[in-house]
Structures are given as C-alpha cells and as structure tokens.
Image 1 (cartoon, rainbow, N blue to C red):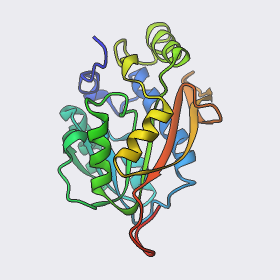
Image 2 (cartoon, rainbow, N blue to C red):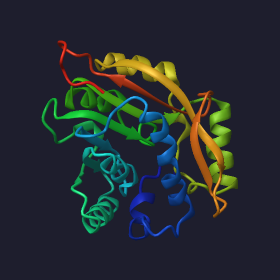
Image 3 (tube, rainbow, N blue to C red):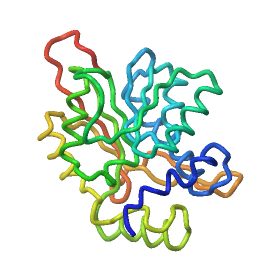
Length: 240
C-alpha cells in the first residue's frame, strides 16, 4: 500500500516519546524548516493554520514563536495526542480533525497557512490550494514543503529512506503523487496565490542519537520548500 496515512494514528501514543525513529525524523525536520521560514514571516501575533499538523511538532514550534496556532489533520488519534501535549504545556493551540479539501474555517481567517509533509499526500491538490487561498487573509502567506517528482527523488525517498534506512515506514509515499516545482507553481497560481521563493531542504548533519538533522539546501531536486502569498487588496493589508 502506498500513501499510507494510517501510520500517524498507529504511533499517536508515542508521538512525543522519542521512541520511534521515523517520528524523530519528522521532529528533526522542524528546525530546518523554520530556519528558512523565519526569514520570511514574523510569527508573533499571527493567526496561523498548521494544515496537516499530525501530532503537533510544527504547531508547538510556531506557538513558541508567538503565533496563535490552529492545527488540523485527518488522523484523529494523532490530533488527540497533539491536543494532550499542548494542554500539558499550557499552550493555547486549537486542534481540529479534518481534511485540506474542506477546511472548516471562515474566509480570510488566517494570516498564514503552513503545510509541511502534506501536499504529496492529498487527494485533490487543486482543491486544497483553493481552500488555502480562501482561508488566507489578503496579503497572507502560504509556507510549504513537498517532494519533487523525478528519478532521484524517488530513489532518495522510497529506495533509501523507506526501504533501506527505514527513516520512514514502507508505503509512506506514493512517488506518483510527488510534485514538480513548476507544477506546484501553476497550481498555486490557479488557486489565486502568487508563488514566491523556493529552496531545497535536506540532511545537514547527524545528532547524538545518530539521527539526521536538516536544513535549507540550494538544490530542489528532492525535497523543496517555498512560499506564496494571497495578493493584498490594498496597502496596509496583512502580510508576512
């Protein structure tokens, strides 16, 4: 089975325990993403949607930077694990169960939408991006990462990461759902978003547990991250 989304609920009770290696990999990706995202948005006081929040790693990191965070994910048990952990830490993060194709939020509800490790899994990319544009305020920012579609990306993410190193469970990804950067740019434009900068994302070192650490890279051939904006209607509208 490819694009197996049951894996997140399967480890929900251990999401924050550091016991599961592939979950630690997801946790280690957060600082690398933020190293680049932080250059493009001031989180403090922003209403931010974490679209595809899973167990809450990214949501808690953004809350720690002063954002007012809402997280949503279809994995109900992972969302409950995120909710329990945030409550225990006294973080005012709202968590909902739902899908990106039908976000249960008002128009123009958020200053930013963050969507990491998600776009390569969704059933309807165009619909998800339309929903992102709908819930963003004018001038608001869409921050994302995803996987490029080419033989090198397939080898790195499927053959190496899933089959050989087991950095992710087998079947996590379907390489047919990977997205070329130019395809994503066209899809964002079609949803009414203005694409901006893109950069690569990948391994930058190894920590004391011999897990990979991550950060921005110049090459977008495998993992890449980027930003887009909902065009502002007038000067003074919300922006990143």
